[in-house]
Length: 135
Length: 135
DNA sequence: TATCATCTTTACGTTAACGTAAACTTGTTT
DNA sequence: AAACAAGTTTACGTTAACGTAAAGATGATA
Image 1: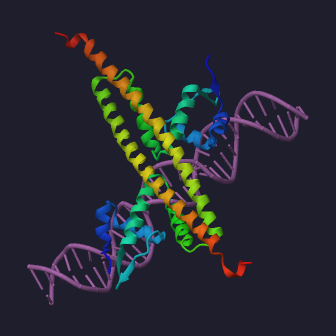
Image 2: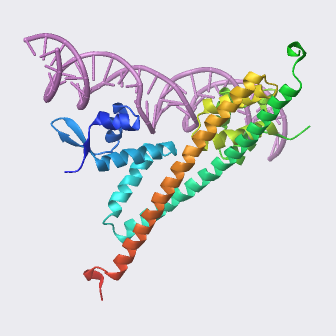
Image 3: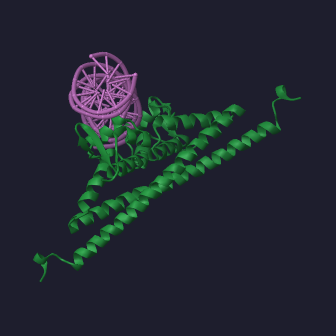
């Protein structure tokens, strides 16, 4: 038997609420088994949770994330058509991520120049201190 | 006088609805002037709209974007305290963006390997075609 | 002058992603 | 046995970011 996790273990490891984890199950992103009425999470579930949170950080909706999971599952034993569909989805995502990279780079540049302007303003404040605080 | 824009000009240029643009004004992200009751957007407003949309693509909330705008405006004639606050905000954002970069890189790698696996599966389908379609 | 196209305000509706509360079961500790 | 911790279901509440009428003002055009 490989390792399993309780809901609160995963919650604290990834710093999310149990409510969220149950919600992700409701949205069919996770499929834990049960012992009695208690949820048991496999390491596959753990990976899925990790991927889910990463996807969220990237701005994907839960529905999109689910779509990707389902596509991938279907692809593992998929027909040629399924495989081509998966490939096109993959390329959609790749294009979106490239756009995001560009956006981030732009904003980083803007932040850089903003920082420089801030530091210059600070220097000027120190070179020409207000009269009330001089001497 | 420098160039001005109507609401629908900006809407079509950036592919957003006029509803959104008015909403951004409601959230104090834009501050167009008026001619009569009609909104007139300056090129500064245009830049702000562009930055707003870019920020959104990066997962910033409108409130966060507004906060950045306000900080920047206050910083242009700011006290030392304001400048330091701005610097720390800038560094917060930089750290968040670096994390996003890492996330994107991870997902890109995963997409790459997924693509490879897809292509291999396709090759295998062609090498070993199902009996029903052979000859 | 009538009809548009474009703009406006007001206001209720919608969706996603949970938060929060209530009431209950199950296993463990005192 | 009583209390406590951790889990459960059910269900209503909340926030952000708009969508979607409805009803009216304004200037240009047929």
